[in-house]
Length: 155
Image (cartoon, rainbow, N blue to C red; front, top):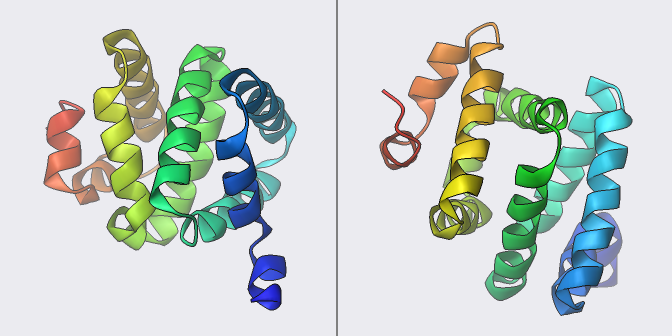
């Protein structure tokens, strides 16, 4: 167990963040997202990969709290920062489309659907823009599960 915790420290971070009061969780996550946006693309992808690895091991209720907060923070960032975050996620998804099959993706999708309408619009519009800025954006978009494309009002 100890080795697992060291291999995936993000699981601990998700658990810790989920137990914090909302204002502290939001402050810490906002700071980390600002840091992420200032990194180069390779560092962004490595950072996101480590988070995704840890999310795979986190409990669903902890994930719900953290992802709901994350979506709220991302939707409140400057558009260029949202695009930076989404571009890095898209690059990772392009390399591994099975991300949509993981448990945390279902939690992310549920949180997106239950977000306020203005947040969903901001997130959807930025995702679309980030997709269309990708070399094979249309193919990437078509590779998303149908329920995701429908919820995002894509094709």
